[in-house]
Amino acid sequence: MKLETLTDLYIHQLKDLHSAEKQLLKALPKMAKAATSKKLRAGFEKHLEETKEHALRLETILSSHQQTTRGPKCKAMEGLVEEGAEIIEEEADAEVRDAGLICAAQKVEHYEIASYGCARTFAELIGDKAGMKLLQKTLNEEGATDKKLSELAMSEINISAND
Ligand code: FE
Ligand code: FE
Image 1 (cartoon, rainbow, N blue to C red):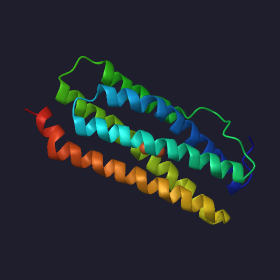
Image 2 (cartoon, rainbow, N blue to C red):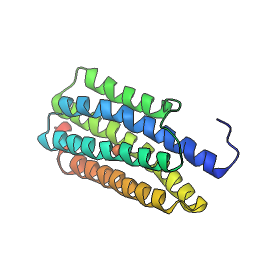
Image 3 (cartoon, helix red, strand yellow):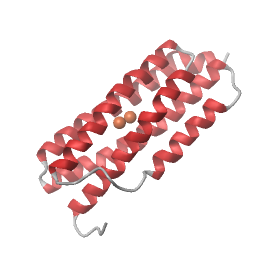
Image 4 (cartoon, rainbow, N blue to C red):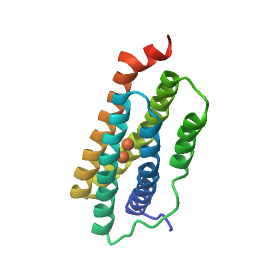
């Protein structure tokens, strides 16, 4: 795909994000299963439901531009998910593993926050108001997830892991 306009770049980013969300959909159940803390597990399960919505929103925006979701695999998410898998596979103390899972999940959220921030701004610039609104919604949910993970880490999980 040749990138000639900001719209081309916007579509490119949307496809990359869709690939990222699809990969995350497969990884989150494994992260939930690996979590010992009930709150952390519930957090991953909640974000799994949100992630399904995120993928659907991207499909809606892409189809409004007569585009499919087809595109290259998001390599950043592939790497981030791989790092999460390493934490899961490592022999670890339960609380320490939970702290590691939070860390891996926050890396994912920060990647998504950066990507959705770019896509939202591109939507605004090219005048895709509906797309902008949907992307902002997702961006807010990614931000809220990141904040919740920080709170969970600082209020209990990192503390237990440090015992
Ligand atoms: Fe997401
Ligand atoms: Fe996310």
